[in-house]
Image (cartoon, rainbow over all chains, first blue to last red; front, side, top):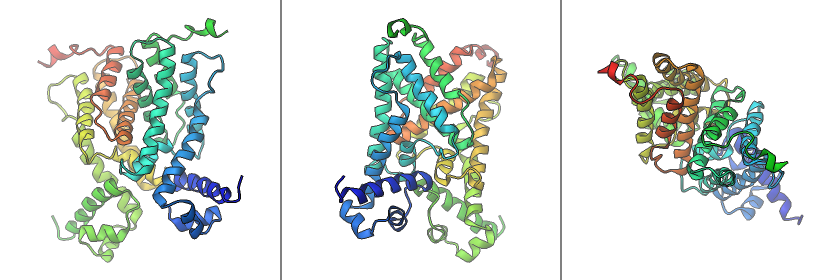
Length: 196
Length: 196
């Protein structure tokens, strides 16, 4: 880690935490204070607050993605890999610190689809849909693209429910995803023998 | 309308527009300016900005609900009445000014489930679920409560999709809701003869 890299990472970490907890409207002063970085240094590292927002969404994005998606090849079936995402969401949403999907939050708060932060949020949301689609292609379903979009809608709807109600999801997203997979002919045991 | 009522309504209207367009963090000065009301008058009408937020969410809530839900008795079937909500959402989400469900937005932005605005948002979100449930009971489905929650999740997921992508939904929410109703045995024509 170069000495120049440290303030940058401190800023991204502090911004990730503050944006998620308090929203993207957090002031630059509060951000710099939390990161222990001067405003001058901040503007040497990022051209603008908008650029910092976009890079923060990207940095959070990678973390959130790792927290949700199973690793590349762990011997599980496509169905299991999809349901893992919903099980992990269910677990995340149980925590008091859960305040929703960081990408949806960024888009909601920025209120401008052209903002660089909204563009990054859209990219990461699309990556989740792509993850679902790859699994659905592997499972051989008829219309993987549509089903991947439907699973993303269930994911975001469940996330909104957890935020609005401030209560655990209690498996409702997992159950809906499982029902969608059942209807598309991706039953529980289809690939299990192959994976063993 | 009493002379006292006018500034109050101007404030609620201006706050509804500004909160939706710019977020609940809009300053009191900007709000009062948009409403053409002095800060002193504002604090005579509302005890705090938090109270103004809560009343604005409630006022917006009633408008949003009227825009989505069909009237009490129009001769349509429970299925049609449920799908009307999704068709109207689809139409609303097509507009450039669509920035998501005002209740989910309030909960996302306030980041505090105890905030009076979050409490009002939760109440209105529950009313949508209740609307679905009443229709599902009328349609005689087996587990109206669960299906009403699932329909709400589809509604919020579709809304999030429209915000994140800033594109029309092109019927994806309507189609998912229709599939859920099909699976629950609420087919297209079941109540049509009765309604005629």
